Length: 165
Image (cartoon, rainbow, N blue to C red):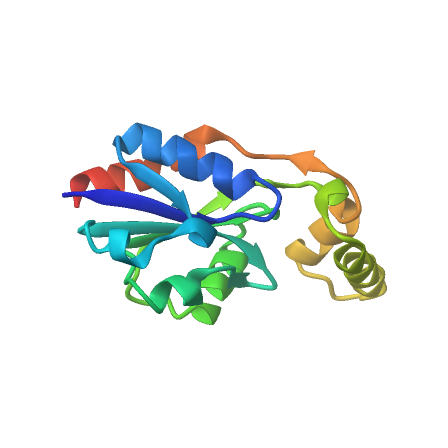
């Protein structure tokens, strides 16, 4: 089945995973920004990857306007907490679409000033909460720093799924 990996990346982690995935699958890979809808019709299966912000997979709605993804991978900076993945699945209406969560990282230095200011405010607000979740604890510890928790081995379940379907 002719497959393409389409991705949306902000600081590079999703792009890294997308290119590694396309290499393992032996298929094409293209940024959502450069996607040619006419060319997309030549593919039977689309795998989409996007970065996560506030539980939303960036670019997924735009892709859905032109294609239905066979599988979706979401790249976030938090560890793969069950509640985080469940929230991503719910917010992005992925009840019927296979979702694979990949932990990426955070490149604070690549963010624009507005994004950095928002994240600092979120960190400060979250730190004040007495009933923080595991995700909240992680945010207080890590927001405002750069780190890389990406690991290509996290792609294995997605590769296996695509190859088997």
